[in-house]
Structures are given as C-alpha cells and as structure tokens.
Length: 206
Image (tube, rainbow, N blue to C red; front, side):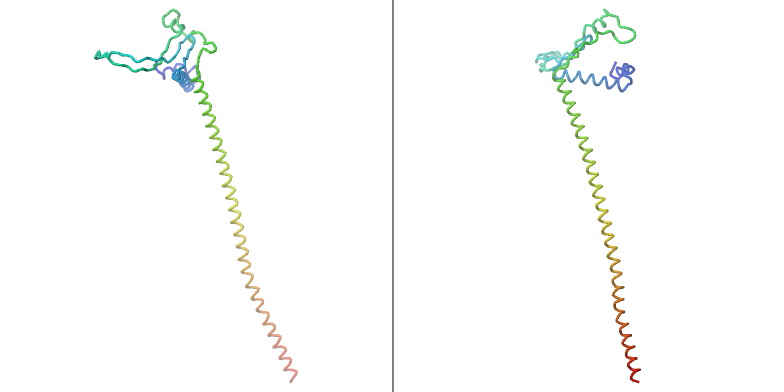
C-alpha cells in the first residue's frame, strides 16, 4: 500500500479524498519534524518513532567484500507497539470490519517534545505575521485609493473653476467694446445739436 492507496482507504471515514490526504500529510509532517528535532513520537498500541545516532564504524562492501569506513550518522527508527505486534503475530485476531482494536491512546501518549512545540509556535507566529502584513497592505491600498479619489475630485473642481473664470472673462471682453462704441456715438448727438443751433441763429439773422 502506497500513500495514494492509504488516502483512498481512509477517504470515507474522513469525509472525502482531499480531507484524507490533508490528514495523512499533517500526521506525517508532525512525525518527521518531531523526529528530526530529536524528539520521540509514541502512539500507544501502534509504536514509536525516534532518532538514533550511529557512531563511525567499519563495514564491508557486500559486492567486493572490501572493508569500508562509515561516517557517524543519525537514522530514524520505528518500534512497533505491543498491540501492533500481537495483531501481526496472530496472537490477536484482526477484526473483519471497523477499526483495528488497538488500545486507545491516553492523554500524553503522543509525546511531542520541545522541538515540535517550537516548530508549531513558529508556524503560528508566521501565520499571524502574514495576516498582519495582508491587513496592512489592504489598509494602505484603501488609503491610496481614497487619496487618489480626493485628488481627482480636487483637480476636477479646479478645472471647473478655471473654465467658469474663462467664460466670465470672455463675456466681459465681449461686453466692453459695445460700451465703448456707445460712448463714441454720444458726441455725434452733440454735433447735431450744434448744427441745429447754427441753423436757428441763421434764421434769426435773416
């Protein structure tokens, strides 16, 4: 059974294939992180995962028989729990339907050490920081949009004011020559009055 088959096997119990895949990934990720950090993950009735340090040693190449020096290393180790062993050996019968009757894990049986806790705390902090950054970006974007809108409105008002002033100036210019023309025509009336007076004076002389 590979990972995909494992996901399919628990999909019905988890409410769907995606939920099952997420659950498997989450469990495996938690176990790997804990073991890499030097912690021991123990599940009662199933088994325990731990990190084992192997000192430097000499080994033999199985193909050539040559003696080879092996460097110091660390390897993961899984030890099956008693309930798991009993089912595999046949001491206990595997139920045909339903879940395997492995002992339920009491509180604290899934032992996650300090490293796993630190990793979980870091994840939580990272999520909070990301949420704050996202909120800050949204707020900044809203403020920028508001400033742009205000600037556009102000510019529109100034443009409208300039147009109104230009219209008034043009209208004033058009009205001014007309008044001057009227003012120029006034002396013509005075000249006519003088001519009339001259005619009257000539008539009297006669």
